Image (cartoon, rainbow, N blue to C red; front, side, top):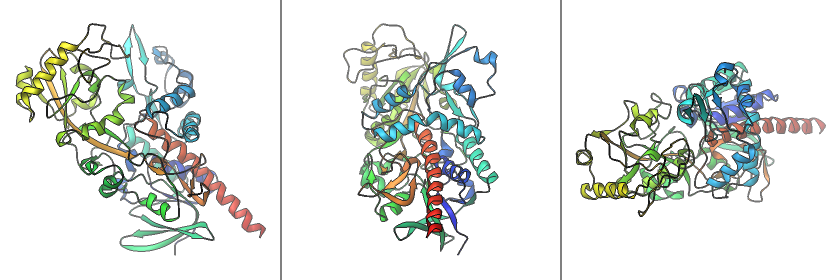
Length: 501
């Protein structure tokens, strides 16, 4: 029997480490359990691009978490306010008003203070110039409510959170899979773990589950989201196989949220089948589709590429790609927009076809060549006149074709031409556990399971159909911080009650 802890945190990604740090600063003795080896730590957070969405009123709020931003640089920046109501309305809009109001409100209202808290624990942030700003008349204009990212992407985030956990003397055990939760008198009493094929019990008065959803479990994907999801690429860690959810359900936890929905994106068709820890940083995604068009192998378009900024469509268009023949589509661009494509299109890992004419380009592709060319010609004929401006929803669309393209419609007519094949990559499932705003896991009677908390992807009920970019990372941090502090508080109350007996 190993030593007993106040709080055990299952998982070692952003949500889990925020929970561990929060519990520790609130007086608890904390153990973090990581299923994977040390060189594969960090969960899905390790693979993130680092963009994190929070509410702020003006640039001075952002400068509190980016203190290295000099006055001269700040003077060149135009930073629109992104209020809590802006954030909440965006969240509700893209989830079709289904996000649970209490959980959504907690995420939004606690977002800024959580960012400040993270900065206080050494997490470094920087402005997201590359993907969320444009230059106009000598000023840098930010847009889309997502101006900040973690320094060095998810790699830097995990590195700093682990460093802080070590500074606080939080124990972290790698190659340690939690397999069962223990209770005594209807209260959490410990965790059974498996290390090197051997089981052992670790006592604890409280547990925070933050070990991801079930996106890396092919059987659970097929059962809950649909059989076609067996073909989806797993964008992040292979260790998010639903272990925490299963353990909680065994104790009577209530499921919650959109169990047949998930966050998925268009990613390079030749991406690794699971996240490659030697190539982190979300380098395979392909998110410049609003600047071009997407066709399937039969030669048909299937989404409105310009329906909204990519921040609000990319998390739902992955599933649309999955529905296409062979789960593949082709993003088509010409030389007019090629310089505007995001950085990932220029990496050596990007799969691309290039030709001086459309006919030569299509000849290289394993597609219905006649229909492919016909669709592009019909699209070009449907493009309407107007001012083209990719930094705003410019209303420059098409007329007479289905689906239409609402914004950023340019004729594809200037060579060279480019085709980027994409497939569907799943990030996390939207279905999870029912928790309250304090991160407590609820049973079928919607009552807290004493001593059990959850954070991160395991929290169901926040995201449905879609999500505003950067909200997953923020949700993990917010509910990680809350669940850690509440777990420590629970332990304190539990200890006081025991002393009174």
